[in-house]
Image (cartoon, rainbow, N blue to C red; front, side, top):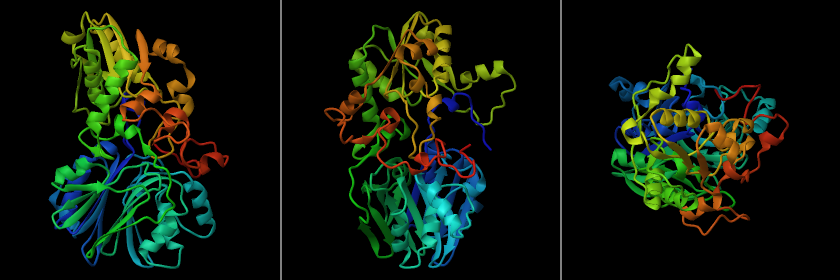
Length: 485
């Protein structure tokens, strides 16, 4: 099992990333490149399944894409013109090889592989019913529920069975699936998780973000719509909407933190969105200071926007080390306390003697923010003010983002003054929920029908949370006390 650094433990984890390719020579090599671009969405494991017209081929490993697919022999064995790939951060199920996606199974109609970004909020309840009926599960991830629902449905082709299965699940999902000579992409009826379509020569590519299209030289075609299914085969691409229409609830945290800044989602540049959030934050929570400093890397665009909006100079007052491994051993409390400096170090020349505004994207437990404030003060800053480009994270996410239990979220147990005292900053301010919506181009948040999924800030969950209200008391889906590592 991979261990994380102390500063990683205080950040929301980046769900998963998916890619699907059809009609392209060396589809596996293109899938590897796509997964490289999506590595930020999951660093625990990577996998690819391909189809060569007769047989399926698969390779899955724990670790980063570069470690799992760094041998030509591995890529060459993944033959075929169709491929799907997945990078994983475990939000349900243990961090073990049998949970690494894409999952593959031989069903009545032939082989079927699936990769999933998101969480099914009734997976535990459905799984228990399937087990009672004789299903034998090989993994502890919620994605396998979809395969078993397809296997137990005795009518129709692969597309019919997949639609039948998805009608029985709740929650958030973007899927890529690979069956006999076809790639399927599906987005849940609320469109919580992203999925885009690109054209690659005479073939097609599906991916979580447009940055995966860019890396393989594909042309962006469009976002897959909420509730849409696309089937890509030798006849081209066919679209359908097999689900009851519902108000769209795209995850607003994609704009704040998760997506790569060079991606475009729902027609909006992630980089531009983050700068706009920073400008709105400067308008809402001004403070007299000498320098605006981002907490790298995710805080950079918002800090640029804050500097533009406030007229205060932007400086890289913190330098990030990009070459830190993920298995750092922490033998003593003293070394553990210093761990944050492995990743971040104060640029003393830019903060000494200055009143510093630190801009970050979120505060989860607050432990990392506390250490960064201490580091900036130790570098000679006379004042340290924190500005956060998201509203306070006060509720757990059940849609594919690994958040701590609510009692561990700083904003769920402290008010603003108490949080500032805990972190040790001279002042603390978050963008307001309406300010976030204004930055995204809306007049304000519609309380009756929010334009995005913002449940981690408001507790306003857009779907049923069957597994959470069924009496098991867990914050993430589980079975027999197995929980995300």
